Amino acid sequence: MSNNDIYQPSLFSDAELGLNDQYTQEGPVCCLGMEFDNDEARREYFRNELRKRLPELRKIEGFPIGTDDDIIRLSDPPYYTACPNPWLNDFIREWEDEKVELEHEGKRDKQFRVSEPYASDVSDIKNDSVYRAHMYHTKVPHKLIMRYLLHYTEPGDIVLDGFAGTGMTGVAAQACGDLENQDWETIEADIDVKKQKRGLRHAICGDLSPYAATIAYNP
Image (cartoon, rainbow, N blue to C red; front, side, top):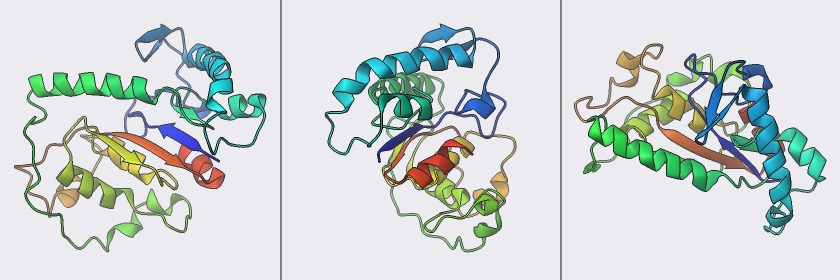
């Protein structure tokens, strides 16, 4: 089964963007440049669009076994689809435009380069409540992933995790943009903060496991 989950900054802020029904926003929402009265209207529109695209998507090798109705029902497009996500390029174009704005605002360096590898002891971060929320055999604490993102990427960068498991890369990408609720002193204790910038990273996460995708989709 192929699952794609586009993470938006909603786990660590008040900007709930409708990753699933429990985060439905009642007021107007904007998605991929389109405005909707609420999240349910956004969801209904993109589910109809997904249904139109399913015949072409089914030609992709490894397309999941299931009826159109099942796939539509399991999906919350364009953020999450229970099949190859046809809106990936749309998100990437939108995020690339954001990079240009961040550069103009001085929040990212267009000439950013990593001069040395990240190396630090991170054995004490498995006590985090997010890590202990559920079990998964290859789970990695999101605060560990944050350290790598802060070291190797700039705000606005796009990260691909093709073996996403329960979505900790997506959680870490969002957490990098949480400027108030994170323990930044601990997270940046072994990072040269003069070279690093806090700020949201975007994550595209996918996994073949239905179990993993279900947990990642329902944080």
